[in-house]
Image 1 (tube, rainbow, N blue to C red):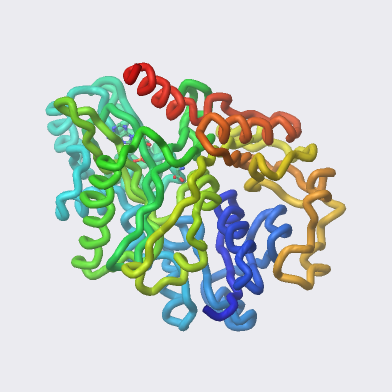
Image 2 (image 1 turned 45 degrees about the vertical axis):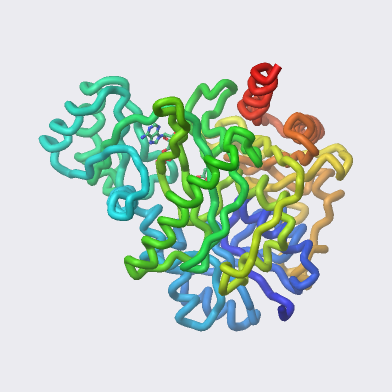
Length: 456
Ligand code: AMP
Ligand code: GLY
């Protein structure tokens, strides 16, 4: 493979993790982020663009050989199509394929058409039709806005009266604006969740180790939903038989279905899976598809890849490749700012004590450069690391700018060790108002303990 000049679109921990993995590959010559965050200066160079036309111009000027798209929004707006039309290689699906995430109704109809197991549902804008369907469900009842709502469009109601009240607010646009005027109403599935990722070239797919996210803000899955407060991989809750069923009946069926529907899916398909116990057997159901890596799942998955990420992102034919994993576990603990997820927090300076590299590393997300370092873009001549050093970051070069600030990624030979390492890294970090969950990966550890005691 020729050396690569790579541009990563996005500014979160996921994009930092992709950049970190690529920066360790000797075939990567230059690394750019648009817009990136304060810490991506550690890995490469941040740039900005205003629209897809300008993005194409920049890619041509910089001789970019690969664009990796992190978040869903530019994908649903067609960034991959525009880049491909201009002869620029891109990792990310077309706008048509991105409807799998952009429209819940599209996803549910697609799943039904292609025999992918998913919760029983109705898609409608008609109150009477919704009311009639709700009478067939046993509460809780799940309501979803059809369009993208930055991860907030799902409401779980405890009885049909409450469901009807929310349906009215969604149909009128009061709750989610236009995105909520078409509703998906579905049956509630009671089980445990998995995050499963399939890299696809449009035909074949390679499925990565299963991960588990922690969506609620507080310990014991209490408090409001967030973008994800931590993740770990691989999870012992998914054995090889269950994994194979998810691979075959959900992920590969989706890739085959998209090809058959003439919108081949090239990129990474993220299946949000609910595993339900039915008649003594674990049965996986698709909750949602996303058309990108999960965040913070990406931050724990990429460090455990043995196969170089670059090979996977550039492969035109994944059929001939296998994906190999290191035999270890990773646990990611998100440190969030004080007001997350309710509102904006004021910027706070971050300080980091030295920690042993063997514990793992930090993936930075909601961080910006402090004033002393502003203007780094005009000074930075190199596009592969070097503009900012980790010791500058340790000593206050970064401000926590809000939301999820960073992810402490602990690596270990087993889940307990990886978890301990992640929390040791967390203890070396200080910023005002910092909050984090204390029970990341405990579900997996408890599962292992219960298996041990059954075996005894
Ligand atoms: P989604 O954006 O569709 O993944 O929904 C967000 C979260 O809502 C999921 O991660 C689940 O925790 C929950 N959820 C969504 N659909 C269902 C369902 N049918 N049954 C139970 N929980 C659900
Ligand atoms: N961690 C869930 C997501 O990225 O949507």
